[in-house]
Amino acid sequence: MDCHYTGKLLLDYIEDELPNEVSRKVEAHLHKCESCSKEFARIQKMVNLMKTLPSINPTPGIAQKVMAKLEKEERLTSRSFLVKFKFLPKKVMIAAATLGVLAFVLYVTMTPFVHYPSFQFQTWAATVQAVPFDLEETGWWARRKKTADERLLSEDKYIGVIFGGILNQPEEINFLVKWIRPDGQPFNETGWKGRISPGLCSFMSDLDVSNYNESNVNESVLTASFDGEMIFKKQKGRVNDFPGTWKLEIYINDKLNTTLQIEV
Amino acid sequence: MNDNNEDWSVVESCLHGDRQSYALLVKKYEKPVFNIIYRLTGDFEMAGDITQETFLKAYRSLRQVRAEFKFSNWLFKIATNLCRDQFKKKKPVVEISLDESIGVAGSVIPFDDSNNSLDPEEKLALKEEQKQVLDAIRSLPFIYRKIIVLRYIQDLAYKEIVDILKIPMGRVKVQLHRAHKILRNELTNIL
Image (cartoon, rainbow over all chains, first blue to last red; front, side, top):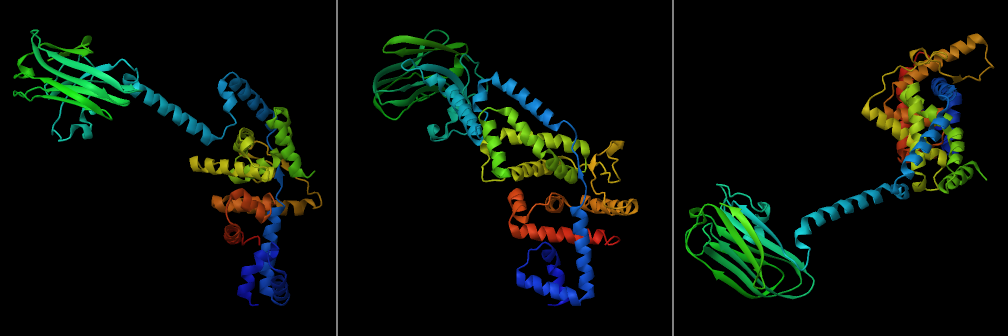
């Protein structure tokens, strides 16, 4: 065994980490090599110095302070129902909290739709810069939903109403939306009559604000399935030509259920 | 019943509502935990605070720790992690006073000096050398300092260091060799 190799093994030799056979070879080399012997002595001295460093007595009263803090924590948490969960793993608590938040968000966003069998209504006005071919897929109407009775803005291109609900069984429906001009004259009607399957459904009736021709009304049903007829009664004219308060009368089963207003 | 089993039976008592029994564990391990932290941070006051935090954190996690782990090593692991976090936030700037028993800002650091076999002159020389060793340890990068403190100041076996630092045995040895190399270069005047 040469000096270079021995030098690499000296620490392991001191640490007693070498196999017996290698350890004996190192020992034999140290007996005959003064240089390695001195290096061994240096490392050994350093190890001894480190191992004999005086220990330090800790600051007094650590145990008392720790126990006092634990007692205080326990007093505070015992007032809370959360004490029951304090030993749960952190990951479980985070997962539970996340689920709670998600449930809350879901509840808030779905609230308008969950009160079966009564339907919730919301008017809106929307700008569509580039009208997509498939409005439902892009969800453009959802992005620009506004609260009821909001004034139409100059950049808005559509006004409308959307309403819906969650059905837990198939239902025969008969909805009609009547657009009434500010002067009280009927302008458009959109309706749905038929059968819808259970699940989330929504109905939408909207008007192109500045279009003049007869096809300026859009309507749609967003549901798993709607089997029935849609009713359109359209008149020529632009919404912009009739400034004032437009009324939207929503009939369910031929009875006026809700009246909404949009300022134009 | 061995030492570790005794520790875990105290932990069992704590988990069954006997919070006061935890004080036994704190008293038993406050000194080694404090020493590790003090040697890692070099700040006497901070070492006291982190020692408390170590025991508080351990208590809050008692249910999650597995009994096959040596309880003391688990505490040391928490302590070293807290020191590491402290270093990430801010490097302790306080000078370690290694001169006799005078500590930070003139406070007295109560060294447990039980080596009475040396005459005063030898004692003085030893203390001077120890001061230089501690200076050198203090100047090590944190990863090497951890290894040195656990191996030589806490006198833990390689296997225990592996458990505490959660690194492979090979890396423990490599880091120890590197730490030694740095220390030997720093301490040429006394070696």
